Image (tube, rainbow, N blue to C red; front, side):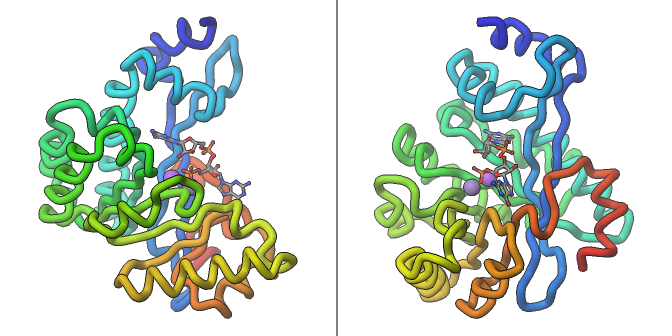
Length: 253
Ligand code: G
Ligand code: G
Ligand code: NA
Ligand code: MN
């Protein structure tokens, strides 16, 4: 209740910002994109993690206002990078609730146009809850977004209930292997086999595959050996503000 009350004012009071975490290509060793992650710093509550306030915002309906702000901020940042001569595709996380509201695709197209951003520099990341709660709206929106050139990525892959049934019918570009599978990839043969199978499946379907939560050199080496396309995690870089990322980017590539 306390968090909810503060959340009402968070955007107006400028308490939110985006942190960006790079996705690194194992083939080229280059940063091939970033994921935008929402951060909330309240004077009284301190830093509130998205795990805590995103569900509240979803219940209150505030996720629409926040989600639109995230989209606009991320698209604006991607355009700034493009103008500075570095094309860095930006991925934005979307909640199921955002697909349930009319006009999501139109708003995204409008923002791309407002900032003159090439649609292929925007990626939307969604989890299977989008398909559970609003399957038809989500399918239609993803189709329209891809027709427009926006990339679509499935987040937390492998953790849900019906992962395979939706990748059967949806048009997608990328699959992100949940970090719970990556954690013990060097110690647990079973996890390694699962990751290997997820990589093979992605490649058979023509999707790029990203391993999340890579924290050690050993994990990275194993993922390379298994043929994974991209990695994301603390080993490469933590989620950081855009200005900080600009400083460390030359060292990452
Ligand atoms: O960055 P962090 O690990 O704290 O994120 C925790 C969770 O919050 C993740 O599941 C992530 O997808 C989600 N999240 C982060 N940013 C956003 C956002 O902008 N919108 C939505 N809907 N979820 C987000
Ligand atoms: O659900 P989603 O994949 O969007 O969640 C991303 C979350 O994972 C973010 O909160 C981010 O801060 C966190 N994260 C990113 N890299 C790592 C990592 O290497 N290890 C762990 N434990 N969390 C990470
Ligand atoms: Na994500
Ligand atoms: Mn994830």
